[in-house]
Length: 353
Image (cartoon, rainbow, N blue to C red; front, side):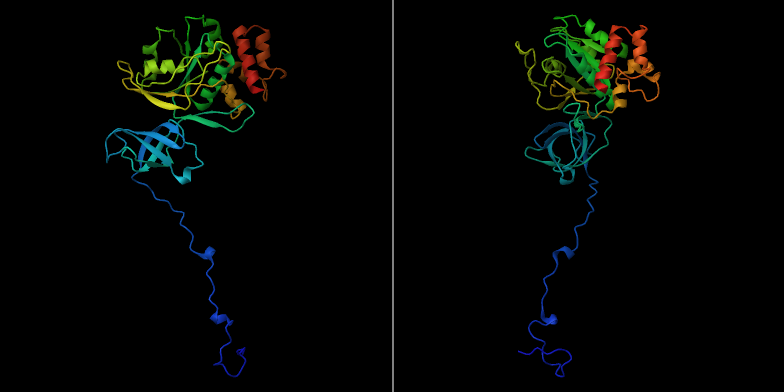
């Protein structure tokens, strides 16, 4: 075998089997043309409202005016696109849909985008957890359902709901149930200065007409402690809702969880001044409502009844019990705040701490 080089006189002799010009190099796979990052525009995407979430599948309602090509109101099932796998999609979201949007049995659409959210109700596992859990999107109102007795009403939990509502820009409402079992006025006195609309409900005497009037044309999220009668109230407002109802344990005094996931239901409001139906979003009952994701400023927004005093505090005041020259302490000392107002200050300071 010859191993001549280009300097040799006989240039017709090959360099050998390992000569550079005879080696077939395998192409580098990393040098291939990369996949394009351009995505389809999906100009034909249909807009729908998420009405429920179940193990990675989304129930979505497409209204009659949302799809010119198919002017039918229909419910369909959808999965989210791969690029949205890190995006939280919750009940109340308005989403962009492609694929099979017919709503036929066995069909599956694909969610490829989210419309801008008007509001976002969030909670954390506890006050030390800074990771927020998105509960509901695009709600206009929050109806806080609390029982006058069995289970006993919890002022601190209602305070937390109010803070979350004001932080999200949602109008809070209160419905106190089981008023035939106990007088709720002492409990409601804690929130009198907030001017929050209150509905009083008893078995067989539910204020359905007044609540329907408030629901007309609005999306209202119902929240409350387990066992307060939230699902019972929703079944009365939405006859075909068929939400499971439970009872309160006689030993522990706690309610049993009956709603396992959030779901949006259409509440017809016949004869109401609003003239249009509203949406009711039922959420699972909770025994705690963490505010770890809410800033101090967000907590202060939940105590609008104390806003004048807070504004009069020195710059940088922490408003805690040992804060120097705090106007809240001065108002308690000179009688400007009564017992209910003093309790509100205590609630504020617990949340800030």
